[in-house]
Amino acid sequence: MRPLTLTLFTNARLIDPEAGQIIDGGLLVEDGTIREILNGPVENPTKYGADTVIDCAGKYLAPGIVDIGVKVCEPGERHKESFRSAGAAAAAGGVTTIVTRPDTDPAIDNPETLEFVIRRAREAAPVHVLPMAALTKGRMGREMTEISFLLDAGAVAFTDCDHVVTDTKVFSRALTYARSLGALVIAHVQDPGLSAGSCVTSGKFASLRGLPGVTPMAERMALDRDIALIEMTGARYHADQITTARALPALERAKANGLDITAGTSVHHLTLNVLDVADYRTFFKLKPPLRDEDDRTAVVEAVASGLIDIISSMHTPQDEESKRLPFEEAASGAVALETFLPAALRLVHAEQINLPHLWRAMSLNPAKRLGLPSGRLSAGAPADLVLFDANAPFVMDRTTLRSKSRNTPFDGQRMQGKVLATYVDGACVFETGS
Image (cartoon, rainbow, N blue to C red; front, side):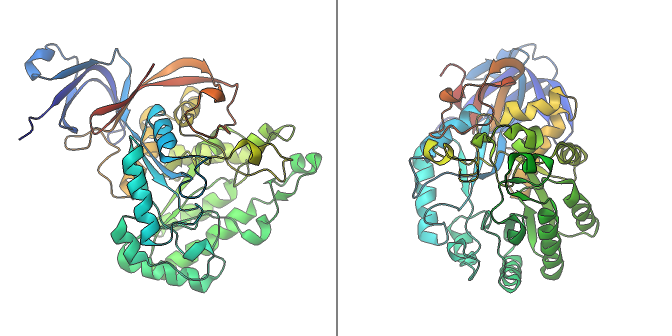
């Protein structure tokens, strides 16, 4: 029988998102699981009989980030991102669990493709990888997938990503079937009729640049429709990205009415606005597009209040050929696994949100929504941890990113917050300088 291993973390500032507090102390990890939280200075580390003692030097130790909505381009576009490169980027960014999207080529819409993805992830990624599957076959919105078989094969949620299911009968049937199985459905709230052909948010900036825009009402209208269908079917539902102030009252009413609904937003929509597009910079072309500053601040306030539950990276790799095009023709999306933490810390440094609440949105809430034991610092939880310096300054250089694609909007920007080490099930999968 293999002997148990003990690891002792000392001299740490522990971020506890459940209790909403930061405490000075340590952590005892036994065989990849948190055994004990040590409150206060660890005066005599030897008494614990640990195999390894890690001095955190007064830096923050927090649950690893659980990131819903990561695109890994296997199968089909491995040149943009593989499980090996995405896993390395996640580890370097303090992300210990990535929940992957099914918008691959081909789509992950059958058990065979799903099993391939799970096998590749286990072979190549140093972090936990949980795959989502498509809600409809080919993400075409015509016929729902075999949700039951996909659940058995390991799917943790179902989504057609940015392909909105426009046929309400198909969508309602899928929601009803998902409800009977307890499956989570994740939807992209954007009315496809209004948003077709657009690449920025409508307004003065779009007009000045001569770019086709989409009204923020497109998000509100899609959310209103989905809320009505959730009320009708009772399904478990998550809106992947709420990015406008107009959508927030509808979300608040749905929650007040007791519907099983949660909502997320991306770190880019919390920290950037439409003016960052400037002179047609395609690394800032996202889906949904960046919003006005009033929308950004409203969404930040919604995260701080808990109305929006989850922050995600929405990591979307695009190669140079896809981005080095006129703005209207360029592909949407940005990589964010490695920039997720320092970008999110901008909200902390601006005093718009505190660290425990930020970790609730980045780690605890996504873990709870997916029924995972991670995302918390408590006895019995897996030792998925990130050690970081919240104040370490650096200039982002996209050429140093571990992702195969390097389409980050933060290239050249001054940022604060560096990951020092990442642990998955108690094992170190990244350390500064490695």
